[in-house]
Image (cartoon, rainbow, N blue to C red; front, side, top):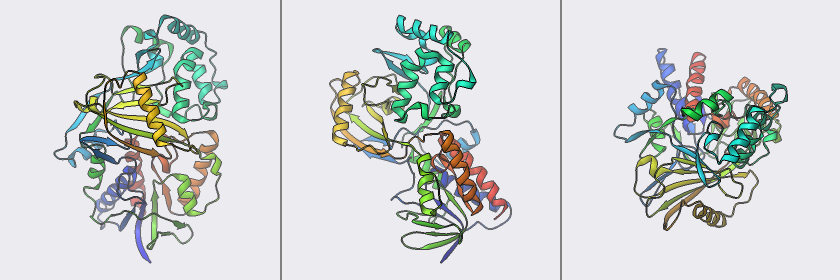
Length: 428
């Protein structure tokens, strides 16, 4: 039996950030560094922030771009990324609607729509049936805030493609601060002077891909801190012991960023599995022989006839001379995926939309993110809170997007890890 002050399950952003912060917090109190092991089930750290290099293209598992609200966190990371070409980019994103590109977000740019669609949206916005009492779901919230025109033309079809579920299931606040709210005054004002305000109006991205942030988080950790290819198979909450295929580790505290349903299976804790639903996302990374559209960083596609919901342009972010895309398809968690058929459909739709013309596909890669987007419902919120309380009482703390079964940014994960490290350093 091995013994550790901290066992961290998952070597993604959250787990690595926690390891850094808890070591700093403990030593700042004049104590020696805590004993700590990070257990990673896959062959490399990073979680979904892994990067693929192929034929000169640099791709992530999906677009992982950092939107910093905490300058001290960005500075801390950059100090550990010496020599990296880190771009700060002012976002240019559009919605493909009725053959034209509308500035994102849709609800603030309805004046750019074809005249009939604009009038439909404006009239429905003005005469919408507002009322907080009727906002029982995400769909209800969209209708109440924006009217049927805006909701039916973009907000509902796009988000149903993304979440791969009925929006009537989701909580009104399912996207939290990430949903671009706007009232009538914002929308009318934007017709004259576009403000472009959003949580990710600017973002940073290193030429080496998102993995460079993972390397920054590994920079100060002991060389043997991360153990790869070592999944946790069971956690004994009573004895406080984590079991892997090769050993057992007794812990004082266990911090998990693993998807909450997976953690609950490891512990054997009774839970409402049906409450913790999510979708999965099939991502294609596609590299072509020459440049394509030069302006967008992202294009959004609400049209149900188009297979994907979003296309990102790495080449426009990095000013490269060959088109480099990531293409995202939302799917139900139990969907069976035919990769070749899906790729053929994607290529056909890219051609239909004029993104691919006489281009030659020279390299490609795919990955399935499962889970991808958590379905935040009244039931899931209650069940997540309940099981997290039970786990915490047994020294198990969940964190991160999937550990907390929530919707948040990469930076949010770092902030949460920092606060958890501060709290646990006090009692270690």
